[in-house]
Structure formats: C-alpha cells, structure tokens
Image (tube, rainbow, N blue to C red; front, side, top):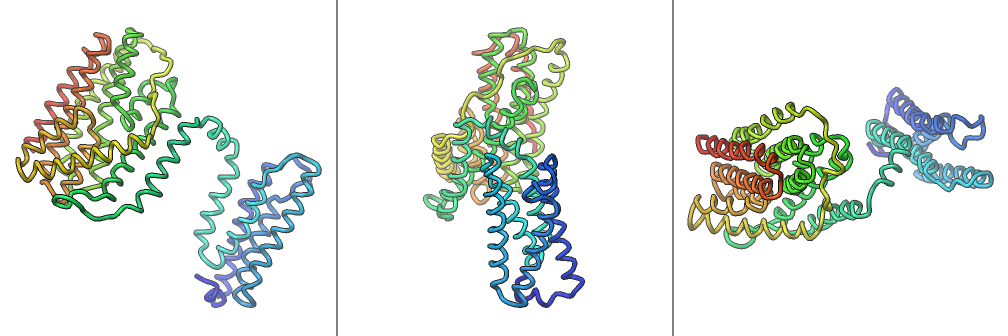
Length: 426
C-alpha cells in the first residue's frame, strides 16, 4: 500500500495499523528500558513509553502525509531526530558514552511506525523484532567481533566480493566448443563451493577441539576432508593412544563429504538426485557404520590440543584455481564426450578425483544439464569420490600410525566397491 491509498483505509483497519505501530515501538522500547532499568525515572533518554509513542507518531505522520501534505512525515522525522540529538548531547555532559545505537533505534522506531501504516504491518513487525534482537545481543555481537581474526574477516569480505560484486557482472551465456563455457555458471559454482567451505570452517572454528572430534569431523566434511585427514594422521603419530578416536574422525569426515555432493546436485541439476541418492548413501554408510563401532569401542577420552583445520577458509587464489579447474574439466568433458564417449568421462573423473572431488562433481553435474547423460554423470561422480577417498586412505598409511590406517583402510575400500557396484547396477 502507498500513501495514495492510505486515506482509503476503513477506520477499523486504520486503528489496527496504528495499534501495531504503537506495540512495535513498545517492543523496541521494552528492550531499551530493560537495559536502563537501573536508572531512576527521568534519567533514561528513551524507554518503553517513549519508543511506543515514537512508533505511534510515525504511524500518524504517515496518515497525515496522505491526508494533508507529504511534508508532514519529513518534518516529524526531523523533529524526532532533533529532540533525540539534544537529549544525547545533554547525556554527554554527565557520562562518556558516545554510542549512537540508541539514537538510531529511536529513529528506526519512527520509520517502522510509518511502515506499519503505509506499507505492511508484517514488514514492520519483522523489522521491529530484528531491531530488538540486534539491540539485545550487544554483548554477544561484540564478543564475536573480538574473537574474529583478521584473516577470517578478510575471508568473509572476499566471499562477498566473489559473490555480490563479481558474479552479477559475468555474462550468462555459453562460449567455446558446445557452448560448454558459461562464465556466470562457472563462477556460481566457485561461489557455491567457497560458501560451503566457509560455513564448514566456521562451524569447526566455533566448536573448537574441546567440543570433541565428532563435531569437528562432521563439519570438516563440509570444508576440507583432505586437510582433516592429513591433520589427524599426523596427530596419530604424535599420540598413538588416540588412533581409534582419530580413525573414527577421519571416517566421519570422509562420510560427510557425500551429503555435500547431494547438495551440489540438488542446486545445479535436481534430476540427478534420484539416481545419485542410493550410491551416495551407500558409500556414506560404509564409512559411518564402522566409525560408530570404532567410536563406541573407545574406552577412554583422549584430549587433543587442536584437531582443527589450520588454513584460511577462503582465498581468492583458491577461488581462481577452482574456476580454472572447472573450466578445464568442462572443456575436457565436452571433448571426451564427443570423441571417446562415456569412457573418457570416467577416465577424467578418476584423474580429477585424485586431487579434488568438488570440482569434478560440480562440472559433471553442470554437464548433465545438457551435455552428458544422467547415468554417466552419476557414475563419474561415484568414481571421483571413490578415488578421492582412496587417496585419503593412502595418506593415512603414509603419514599416520599403523593402528590408524588399519582401522581406516577397510571401510574406505568397502565404500569404494559398494558405491561402484550400486552405481553400475542402478
């Protein structure tokens, strides 16, 4: 609804919207009043009554702007801002508090009251709830900011750069042989994998080693199973008594990689899900079930200092690497599909799986939209996943303790064989 239609509201509807403006202001004022509850009456700049009245004033300003003149609203807004500035200036004479958060909250209350009248009560209510939450979680927000490291902030800004700035600028059309190279779609895949890795990294970061190997392994499966396998293999050499615990962690992380592949498939080509679901679940269970038995067989708790990933969650060089890798795989996939057929795709999947499973999964999923058959894409993804886990099993043999790799090898091989068998029979 706009100002032109506001004057046509019935009196009950108008009264309901004004009541909503009052109550939404009171909601924000409730939080502000609770924070300053230790102050005597009259010492608070704006509490529950002031915010409720400011919300109501915003609503009446919107009504009068529609009925009398559009100048009512800006004049009223500036009046509220001037009064608030005078009050905050007077406060500075008694205490060194330069925060303007309360001032912004008061002005926002006025705006929300107007939104409840002229736009949407639901939108205003959502805005009021979010505003109250932000105001109430001051300590938690500041605490998170204090814990945030510089390289993690850089990573978040880089993620915004590649997703919000670069992605919309890229052309959304195919180039090259078979129009296989679509800059927008390739970079979208880069954003997808970077975003999942970013979320996985911070999940591990917030959990910390003291929360246990289980939580760390689950979320490392969203970030970098190879990095976790390398880390746990080294730790097993340093603390052989923790080998069973670390072996369970490796299997859990490698098993969590498979649900991640389903997410890729669902976001890019949902038609793959029905064919990919059974082999992926089979391979995941072949790792999860042994991990559960190993975990339950652990008789004592072993404390480790830092079994978490030690690398930046996002690097532009890594993003560019994925872009180049996906482009090469798409071109090779198009060429092999047209010259060698499905066998070439499987060979490419096996070779790519040695280094990384995400790029080949994203590429094959993309090619399955209009390039290769769904069955071919599914088998290629299974081959790449199996080879990738086999490589990680080799890393445990190379870097880990004997007890670690003996627990890891059999489930890894079983996952490989069962996944291939189900994919071929399917």
